[in-house]
Image (tube, rainbow, N blue to C red):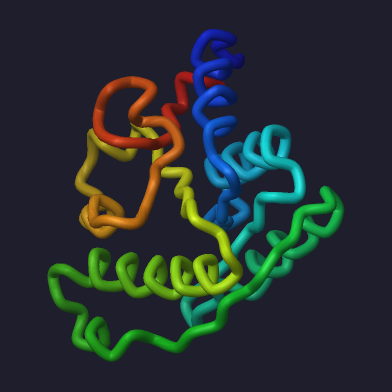
Length: 160
């Protein structure tokens, strides 16, 4: 169930943006962020999906199909396996997430998009998720954790 007050806060926050790139995996969280951003920003939102050897092809195909069905501009960014994670270091999630979002941010900024959104949510802040540290670096915006006051930006599942 959608919490109307929190949803209105999200709509208001998105309404302050001139445009947005949404990191779109096709999962529930990024789909919610993308659909809501499209509702507010219309054609000024673009979905970006990163394709790697360790993401199943069907996930990429679902993301492409969903964007096409919903009239959302979408770009798939392909990359190989980051050499820094080949030996499975302890900080591999951070290194991978930073690499993927660096690619996404570069593609978005080259297209004139000034805001990069991620669908991380409040549930993610309570568990060990080392990849999230990469999003605390400058240049990324969460979509709703700031609605709950946890940190700047992000989406809290309590909205839905």
